Amino acid sequence: MVWRAEHQILTDAGVTVAPGLTEAELDRAESVIGARFPPDLRSFLSEGLPVGGRFPDWRGPDSTDIRRQLDWPFEGMAFDIGNNAFWLDAWGARPSELQEAIRIARAIVAEAPRLIPIAGHRYIPAEPALAGNPIFSVYQTDIIYYGSELATYLRHEFHRIPHVDAVREGTRRIRFWSELVDANE
Image (cartoon, rainbow, N blue to C red; front, side, top):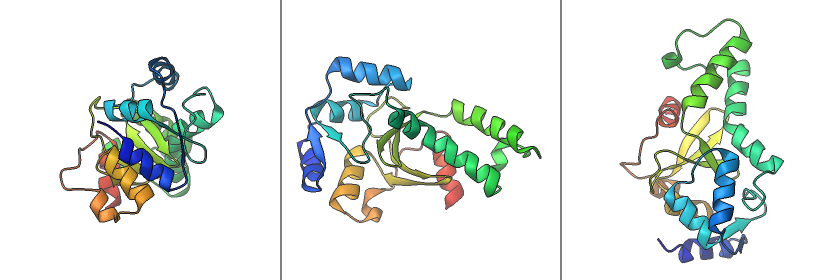
């Protein structure tokens, strides 16, 4: 896919788009995060790299900002477990001890597909390793679909198409994360 239109939407929205990542830079970023980018994200980042503001610094993937963005989904979930009594029935009986509940939740999340930051608290799952994975908005356990796939998300977030048009019938379900979306409906 050629991402010229999406990069132009970002530029028009005031986002700086730098030259794309090289294969070596993509490989290094994937190594640091412990996951492969889905093919559409890999292609998007190789054609142009959004920089600054809410965007991950994929040219410096060892940064604390990327680590913080990778940890954000679980940290928010742990907050809700401790402060808002969040617990899914599918996880079994909730332990009375908070640290044990957080340990169990951490183990469950560790088995889920890795979420890769796109911008701010918007994420794309690394699995399945296919183009067309949905984009999730993740704020604590308030997790919703924010785009049926990467291109639609970018048009929604930066070109202001209505949210209803950004998430279509038939959006790919992602193990674990789609269950959290369902829990919010």
